[in-house]
Image 1 (spheres, rainbow, N blue to C red):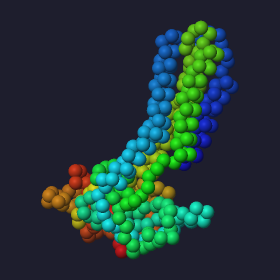
Image 2 (image 1 turned 30 degrees about the vertical axis):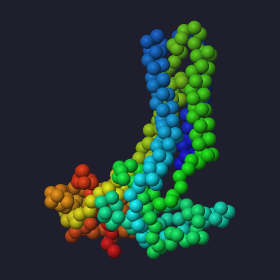
Image 3 (image 1 turned 90 degrees about the vertical axis):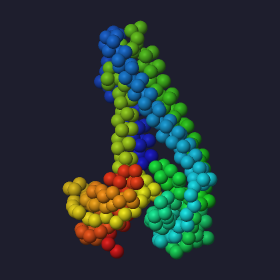
Image 4 (image 1 turned 60 degrees about the vertical axis):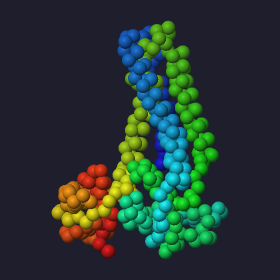
Length: 319
């Protein structure tokens, strides 16, 4: 995904707007807009580029340092739990480095001492020790703040910056700053003709290149939002309470993702204070598991103590 978005930006956001402009625009030694319109275009372009640069700095550096600090805090102050490994799966073995990419399912108590199950994928740097075989017990450290990702770490887990990755981020950020400054300097020198910024139009690379970056960022956020939309579910899983709910209705919403239907549960339950709630929960279900979805009776749920309308169904399918 990172390579795709990098290539997309380097092709469609930089050379493409410049190529379109040079092929369709003629150099004229007179103003193209009034002074007021030109300053509006200039202001809009500066606002767009400022947003784009802040977005990259925030996502490439600030969020990375914040995540590193959160992990360090969990390793120092996390709430310890013993976790039983229910399942182990080898995804990939690297013979050269002797490192396994593995998937395990852990069972441990969350912040409310509710027994939960959670799946995680990571690199095992010491596969010869067989620490993560099914049936083994490992220690995990829970994040005291259930609204903050990551929600837990394995005890002893190491965190460090990827040197090559950080160098590439610095290079890309410097490149973007130089590109933006160069864009303004080059076209102002070439096209101003002592009329200031009155050569600007919407399709000018100074504006259109920024618009292409902005659209790319918005598309990226929408796509990433779909990938990580279950973050609220994980917040409830790690910090929520459990309850037994009565199924009122189960139906398909009509929405499908990759031909997999979305199922809506309407349930009623009482929270730990004895107050009754009726709410709904939607989830995409694999077609192979559709027949195992319960249609009536009782089902175990977890809910947000501060907002009981938000629930998850951690074990949806019949055993």
